[in-house]
Image 1: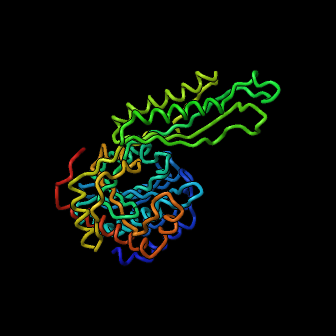
Image 2: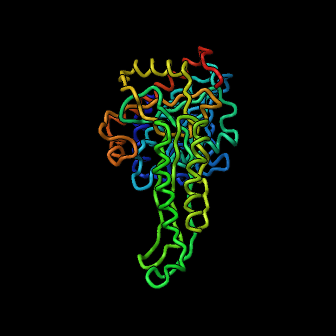
Image 3: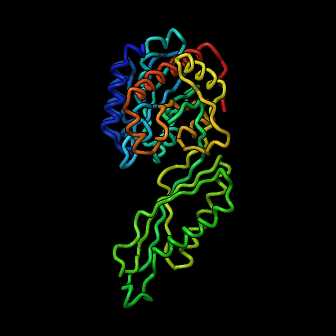
Length: 370
């Protein structure tokens, strides 16, 4: 069935790739996904869970309920540098392949279009609103530079930091100013020193998005966006307060007012289901996909809101290799790699491997609750 849909799936992938939309703005992509699933025979809801670009499409009425996740948001300035166009098309393809088989297999199949994975936590919001409550298992595929059965997924907290000071003429009356840029500088220095006492699995990264408008005016407002990563939620809960104290130090030293706002929920570490992974890997290898032996000391990894799902539903999140090194995710070169013949094959292989894995699950009780 995936073969019968190959032209549609590749066309969908390329169309989403050519029209990138940011988190919670995926109007066209979510519509195209919803339309394709309706064509495949699914009962489709678009704009569900109080999210205008969320999709829920269901077919079948069997006792084993399998969820397949589609992502379709892009990155600012880079477009689909994480290949969410491939994810969306593969999810539609797996759903289409299973639509005519679901009842005979004893399956209910739900494809969830999940907005805002890139920092917005769409799956976390959908999880809180019941989207995953009735699922027995959840799966998705994600492109990467190399094939991986399981992505090393870290726990992540994000926050927007704002300092408010007082402007003044930097030459004539500097003593009358309260320098918000100095507050951010102090915080950054403190974070740099903190890194010596963090673990190898911790990451702290950030950018300053606003810091003054003229060199002869004491900056009265500074803003930044920061991300803190740890290997687990438990480790993140220890690291995050230490980072926040660095920003408090900037406010204390300068007299600025500090505001810290989380723009999205925290992401949990990814905990893939081992039994499901074995099934998926065997199916992917049957399609000719090769899982290389990765070097020891692999990085902490990226983060995904699928991690939150994996804490409550048996979940897999394998990576489809695009054979595009040295280009890796979140680079412009990876954007280009996500609309190539190799990427098109990844769409079809990912769809087929997920469909076969769902069929295997219909004949096994190997999944377990986390």
